[in-house]
Length: 317
Length: 317
Image (cartoon, rainbow over all chains, first blue to last red; front, side, top):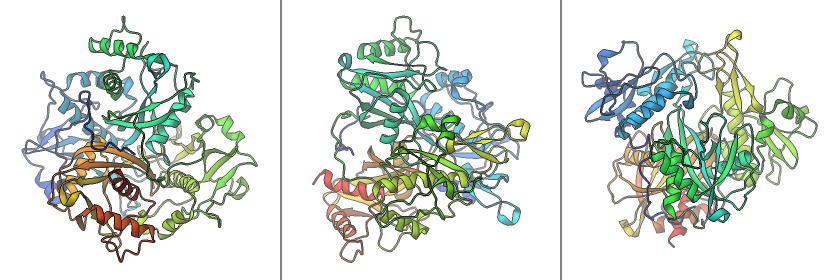
């Protein structure tokens, strides 16, 4: 536990997908009558195509109105913004694959302004969850949308269902800096997965499993993937990541190990990078990220791994 | 982000359900051949009845062997302990209701030693997830257990399924101390839900939703439930909570507000408690928790809310 709970937090720039300007207006979504009142001509509706948004020239989301959706389209109530109710339409199909296989999603991330990126991310996670959860995991019967899209219900027992309630899923994932403060004047352990573009390295990461804390998950993942033992795991920041719906929990940890034992199922390579290496890679990424002059290609600025690397550099410079 | 990443962390005693002594042995669960090799006479099998364990007089879990389970019972590979493979058997039915309606589960929590409580918690979450996820949420067809119980797969398309993969669920929940440092020499906002026993108060809590950070979730929940605006949200500690499978993310926050606007759907009452109030309630809970001499009844020591309250008292005493 942290004894410096009142210390001022130095932040190293905004984290992508955080900072949504929408008021989630929980009291409306749970009240059938209030929700029905918001289904009016003022309502804005986010329409995604293949889960991608329409974007105007200024990096803003293009919203439709209720007139743009069929009457039988499921709608998720995102909340209120500028006194207007905001909805997102549930598409027929959900995400087909992982985020790294979605170049058009990555392009949209570059274009959108920070607030609209956060709105898009939250909406995308929700409508994708609905599209991929049309049936009850407990009994196999169809489910239907409820509470403004923040729940799905199985049919009542007399109607052949089991009456189970299902809620949108958010998967906690730890993503961690592993620092050996003695090695080469202070070095970080970064890895590359086989799917990464050439020369790209990032922080190690893995899902928090049932029965473990954040700190235990960090230690387990680093040991599994790189054979390195860490201590003093500290929480730094989180990012909601919408491909499909992770809570990325960014941490820092220390180690005295230098030897790496790779889990070749997970990682193609893992290496120690010095402060100068990381500084060059981040500077290169700021310039566009071609990487010719950098020792490795850093994560994209929209990834929390980028924010963690910046935090590490600025913390002790 | 936290600038004191290397500070020593004062801990206020162990957190219940954390600290499992099992090595999860990820390299075994993902390897069909290695996993089959562990299905031997040395294997220990945790058998739960109504999701409750058998406990010996010393507070230890009573394990069975593979001879104790039918051949068609699904088994989850928990990992290795004392060089023995450890499994848990998936029961026919999952949890029927919330934890507060399970007095026998609470009794088991008091009896078990810390390590065995952590093993039980993780195993309970996993087998309950299997019992409640026998069908594919995407297409409604039956799923089958895979990867030693760390996955369920829908049937292949040629067999009538959609080939979706499903993973055990862990829901991040924020639970937060809200401190007004000026009010009455430093006070905490605690609330009571209608289901709580009389005079019991605890920290406010709520699920992290898609599209928000931990800090944003804390601020939203406190505002929704009590109409109080917080600042300087800080992560303190986490607890894996197995009813059914939450990651309780304990935080601290500050406020200058004193007025409370209650969300009566969520809370029956919310009040400010002084340092002396909290100290008396924790001392009372240590004595058994009858509460006659205390201004309120504190959370049980197995709840992270109890650890957070202890942390708060010890931090500035």
